[in-house]
Length: 88
Length: 370
Image (cartoon, rainbow over all chains, first blue to last red; front, side, top):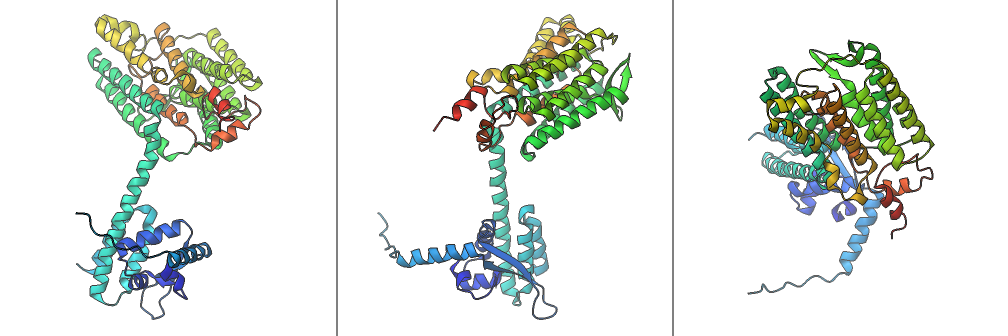
């Protein structure tokens, strides 16, 4: 969500994968759930180059942006968990 | 594996409700210029589609869980199946024509299929109940006017080589619908149904209708239910005045007595099979029984009594394809309504204009519960 929040424009699936490092097997179910909750909107966009197929572009809705902002703020205020030693 | 083949697999694997996401993935795969990266991306998309499938499975189980937790419906399904199988056994033992056995067996499967399918797909609301009530009443009136007649009794619709007794299929679902929702629309549909029973004429179904509506009136007293019960009583009186010359049909009528001629255990099995149909309510604690449950039990008990007394079809047991369908279809209106509806029903002032969502006593108690 932070990747989409930081982006100035809509992103396509492959782009989100490159930015976040999340593989498509996890990424698309996440995006679908965000869209189910009306936190994400999508639209088809014609390719700027002729002959290239249109792509599905994603961006956060207003409520999605509000949630992502809250989450990002909470994340910044929270101390990073220290690694625990594995119990033996 | 080629990019195109992977795209096809993505489309094939994605469930219907995520079809647009699969199309988005396919477009994305096509847009990636590097072939190796596109292949990796496509393989990831296949994993995503598999997860969508899993999501659908979990969702389907959640829908099904409503049926699993509804013990009365499960028992009704089980009892209908048991009764139907007793009927099939009787037909085989008694040497009935193979067509009868096949049609009875097919009716059990079709009934189960429709009962489960409708339960999973149809969300019951007032419009559905009123729609079914009017459609059913019109079909019954149509049968009484244009249906197939035998000895002045016009009760059947010829569908291909089969003669369907529409009242046996529709009356159980109509009375459980009325038990669930009593308003001027459903009451009018019941009066039309009563008129159809009087025109046909059919004493057994008319008495079943009267008993069912009288039971609703007993649990939901009011002018509407009393008036409807009176109309059903008049229809029953008309059927008693009109002659009923239909002869008993082998393997269908009087079998609750003629079964004993084959062997005492055959007769006992037939009675047990019949009475199984009214058993589900016995497994529901008294305070939790709903009006539709009472009506279902009362209706089928009345039909069994009618079959024992006169030349009327033995319900489900015997050659009872129409009755089997009717028994299973009535499950549609036996499903509990969503939790939120109970509050709405509790707000209604007129008890006769009510929507049966919970047991009569519990619904009023729940208004005060915290």
